[in-house]
Image (tube, rainbow, N blue to C red; front, side, top):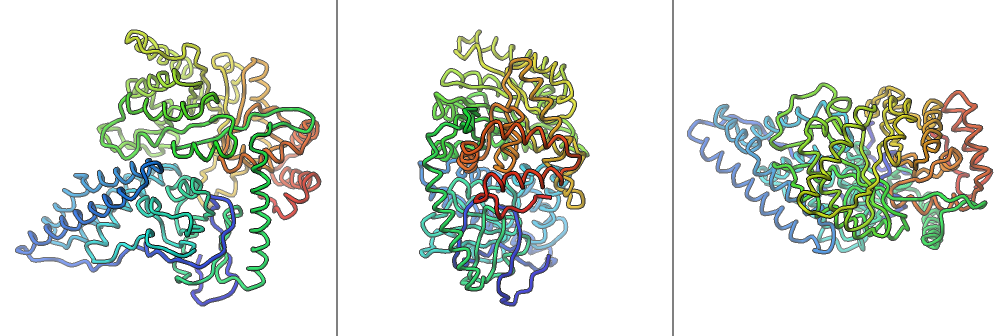
Length: 595
């Protein structure tokens, strides 16, 4: 996508809306584009001076990160402090430092060029990874390298802490050190060229409840500080240099949005129940403990999916049982008496920077990851299980296993859980002996034998993101086929319907924790199919609750029954949208079909 730099009015760009809301304001252009350097050879007698220059740039980068870490308020965003600490570790990484110095010595080239060569080598280790979450973490190395590069070239490290007027930040990307300094009272929105739903910027935007759109490719090259911009975080749209009529239109939308937000807050303590008395539990997905405050403010009835991957990332050493325990205990104590569902890690060995030396896989997303990795590396798995069990002594906890594909896996998993319990008993450590266990339903083979698997666990939770990808055999990050990613594909809906039936026949609970669960448009289908729980981003809870409390279970069942009669996703999408417009003209009148 190429955007002309002339100040055309109403230039609209679509990206990924990662934090809902509307912001209208003046651009603050944060220069985070890659610095340019001149590659050059150096004479042998100058190698020593060049290495000294590189070491000084690394030291200056370390001082800057220490300063950014020190500015994080002690009561908030400690996870970002940990990320900055991880960046400090990357700064000291032997691969980065020793290899760069070695390259300067052997090839007689300047520091910038040597660093660029080493950076490319590091990037290659992430290239084969088909995983949005991990892709976000790989950017940590980019942040660190770019910081060193800026210090080598004398380019200033502009920061956000000095902003004293209302602005919308536009940047190529924002590092954790940038986002940790954001003052919500003046920064009204984010817009970035890169990033996804799980990038640091997205997580911070949701945590601060600031409208944000990422993945806009070249937006930072299309604006200057002082330009006017509109950010529609709900629709994933940005409008550059809006005309007065468009500004007026969005001011009205913003006013309506704020009115709705205020109205929605009244729903916080009301039951999530249909007009004819059918209740669904609405829970929250979290990735980091700092999101707890937000999920409490939005009335979540517990945590339906606590992703634990961040504990493992960017570390030289694997986390200990005690390190796991301290994090889980914090979350469980905050949530009690509501339940916390802790998912064991959904990682492959490729995510570890640590001592694990595993062969590189051609397709890690389909390889040794999640429960498969756990069943191979049993002691690593047990450390996490023992920590989860210990946390269960401080509040209600469920443990959930990802990527189960068959009976042997769940049975072996349960054996290891029992071994972990036995080890705790022998140490005299208390835990909930009756802890509930569940599994993600995201592999088609598991969906096909759900009736058998339901006899092995206490609950199912449907992970729609992977389920859709695996069922439709499409790579979500492949731009040539991602149009095939259709949540309303008849095959997907039939599988959901089937697994709900299997769960209920066996008397176990079934929920959904994928992105479908937080989409109000899909709510009647999911409720009508009989799901017991829906777990979603905290910001989606009240909007989903509003729809739930305005629709009858009878209508939901009718809609769910009818969608199963269509043969294509487009037909289903059209039908559902028409129904929702009929039932909720104010909420879905402007909604476009997703196909």
